[in-house]
Length: 409
Image 1 (tube, rainbow, N blue to C red):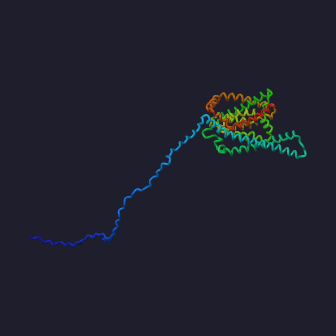
Image 2 (tube, one colour; image 1 turned 90 degrees about the horizontal axis):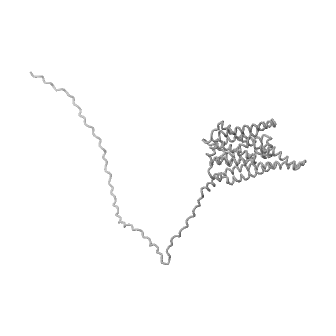
Image 3 (tube, rainbow, N blue to C red; image 1 turned 180 degrees about the vertical axis):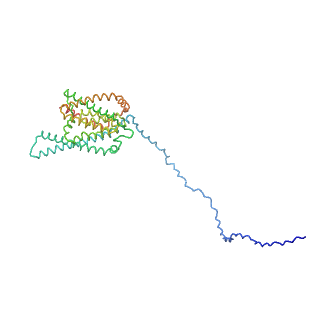
C-alpha cells in the first residue's frame, strides 16, 4: 500500500540583502608638479687667511732700555691704642653726655632765676627812683629782697620749668618712652610693702642724722643752717613755693639725676652710676650741709630708681620734701617750742631705732649688692669727662661761697 505522496509545502521567497557599499575615500587629483629652475653653481670660496698686522716697532739703539718701576714706600703702620686708654676714652664719652645734660639744665634754671630776681630789683629801684618818696640804699635792698622772696615760687616754677622743657626736647627719645618711667620689662622689681616701709625708715634715719649733726654743731657754737634752707624757709610764704618745693622740684630732680644721668651710666656699673648721680645731686644743692644730706639720700634714691623705677624714687623724694620736710614740721611748729621738740625727738627715735633694725636685717644683702655690682677697674676715669668737671667745678664754687657765708655769720 503505497503512502500518499506529500505535496511540498509552500515557502515564500526570502529577500536577498546586498551589503551596503562602503564609502570610498575621495580621490584627489595629484597637485601639479612645478619644476624648480636650476640654481647657479657658485665658485668655490678660498680659505680665510689670518689678518696681517704690521711688525712691532723695534727701538733703535739710541734709546735706553726701560727701567723697572721704583719701589713704593710701605704705608705707615696705624698706631695701636692700648686697651686701658681705649677704656678711659669710652668712659669719658659715656659720662660726658648725661653730665652735659645735667649741666645744661642747672645753668638754664639758675641763669633764668637770677635774671628774674635782678629784673624785680631793677624794676623796684626804677619805680622808687621815679616816685616822689626817696629810699635809702639799705631800705631799697631790703625791699628788693622782700619782693624776690615773695615771688620766689613763681620765679622757680618758671625758670626750672623752662629748663626742663629744653631738657625734654633735647633727650626726648629717652624721657618720653615708657621704660624711662616704669622700668624696662623684666628688669624692674615689684615694690613690696615691707621694702617700701624700710625705704621710708632709711629716709627718716637720714633726717635724724642730719638733725643730730645740727644739734651737735649748735652746741659747739657752729651754725650749719645753710643759706639755701634759709632762702626756702623765707620764701615759703605762698602756695607757689610750696608747690615747687614739695612736688615740682622733686619730680624735676628725679628726671635729671635718677632718670637721664643714672640710666645712662647704669650699663657701666650700678655702683658707679649710683655714686656718680648722688655726687652730682649733692653738689647741685649748692651748700655743704644740705649737700651732705642729699648725697646719702641720693644713694637710697639711686638704688630705688635702678631696682624699681623712677616713679618710686619720685614718690620717696616727694614724701621727704612734702611730708618730712614740709607738712610735719609746719604742724609741729603750730604748737610752739613744745611741738618742735616733740617732733625732733620723734624723728630721732624712729630714725635711730628704725635704722638699726633695717641695717641689722638687710645689712648682709646691702653688702652683697655692693659686691655684686662693683664697677670694673678704670670706670671712675669717667669723672675726667669735660662736662662732669665743669659741673663739679661750678657747683663746688657755689658750695664754698655758701660755706663761707655760714662760717662768717
